[in-house]
Image 1: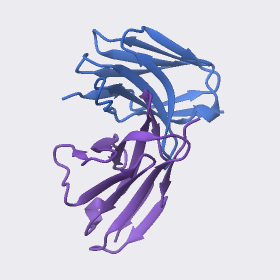
Image 2: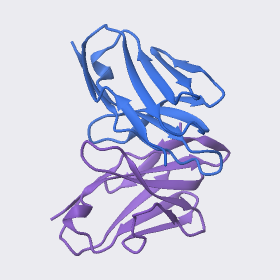
Image 3: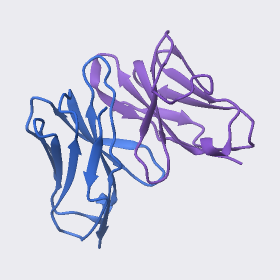
Amino acid sequence: KQEVTQIPAALSVPEGENLVLNCSFTDSAIYNLQWFRQDPGKGLTSLLLIQSSQREQTSGRLNASLDKSSGRSTLYIAASQPGDSATYLCAPCRGAGSYQLTFGKGTKLSVIP
Amino acid sequence: GAVVSQHPSRVICKSGTSVKIECRSLDFQATTMFWYRQFPKQSLMLMATSNEGSKATYEQGVEKDKFLINHASLTLSTLTVTSAHPEDSSFYICSAIASGLRETQYFGPGTRLLVL
């Protein structure tokens, strides 16, 4: 059974700082991995999707890396802004055919103006 | 972009009543939809996978007779919480996979259920 751990559980940084969120998963046989953002009481917004054959994916100020063999992924946020404050969730995908995601508890990010 | 809606966004009900939550893909056809449950400060837990026209596949520990799922069309799946109890109070979120774009799940905004 896939287990996903996200560290740290919470993070508070001043505006403008670069930061890294960590995700580890126990079963490296994944199809892809997604990073999501969740605002309080809201649904999920997909940020980045990394295929199992890829090492990293970039979108704007976000960069996600994947080391499938070691079961790790990181989300790098450059020049953080108060609007980045949210909970960030990592979710590896079980495999083609099922497309089921397993979620970590997330990292709650607060960017202080 | 692909949009998934849920209705209602929030519901309060008395213990013992049944509650139906709808999940709709607004601008695409979804052959597969997923239902998740999220308790406060916890991760999203997959409850069931719903495929259009067939019975849902439930995760271990999820009672299929309590959480009825119907995926009658390519744009609509419903989750009915039968005889709801306070411990069923949670945030229920659905997601959908677009036919032909099977890698990305699009999530609904969630439904907050409070059972008194």
